[in-house]
Length: 150
Length: 150
DNA sequence: CTCTTATTGATATTGATTATCAATATCAAG
DNA sequence: CTTGATATTGATAATCAATATCAATAAGAG
Ligand SMILES: [Mn+2]
Ligand SMILES: [Mn+2]
Ligand SMILES: [Zn+2]
Ligand SMILES: [Zn+2]
Image 1 (cartoon, each protein chain N blue to C red):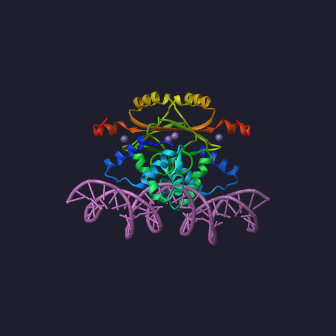
Image 2: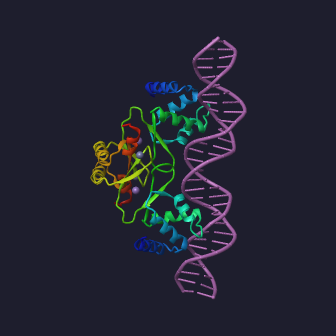
């Protein structure tokens, strides 16, 4: 089990910088967040935390995930379904997602071409771009094999 | 004012093919949909239609927009905010969107490089891709000029 | 330790969309 | 043109995720 020293420090300074308090709940939520590698929802995290001794409120999970995003430790990600998911941001490289429309499997991928592409677009459309989201949909290898479809 | 003969025919055959009925409401909603060029929400369309004589129910607008999507006349688009928007699909080319994070302006853009890029990704990640969505965020020219920021 | 202020968590509320259902309209068949 | 089976409508209730409210509690500066 990792100790997440750096991330804890980032969060602490973030809280201090904003005049916010360091609480047991925030600590627990941060640890649970960092220990979970998937793209999970607030509810997923809430259910994980519920098993611990002092159950943490749902609202607090939502609130804290929002703080983690502001602290640049987490980012929201919109994949399947209608609920927001979260992923690690600190020390994680930019990436895109492919979602299998059949089994829901989501994989992360680097698309090095995106950088030059967004540069080109900036110039052509006179926008100063700050962010982009590329999401790809299709069928993964296994799902195609299983169904003998192509 | 255009007559949208082709689109009406597409919708008619779609309805017939599914054993659905041709109603005055569906006709009105189709016309309103086709006359509106922006990326609008179900509510936008509902408000437009409300001004007409027999006010059409909100639920019917939602239901019919869903049908228009299934008929390939419309497609859903997720831009600003939490509500789904709709755009024309029939006889409209594939395109991406840039959203100005300052003024909300949304522009459509062709990105010809996307095709070869997705082909490459297909091969590398062994997915059979069927769709992609690229959304870009930044500041438009006017907004940067106004604020003397860069 | 004390006091101000932030935080928590139960719960109510919101906002968007979908489901329900009785009344009504459509349309194929006669 | 009727008829009758079936689809549609629209008012409204329900759902779902997320946020706001608020009284009780905890943090932490001084
Ligand atoms: Mn990811
Ligand atoms: Mn568009
Ligand atoms: Zn799959
Ligand atoms: Zn702008």
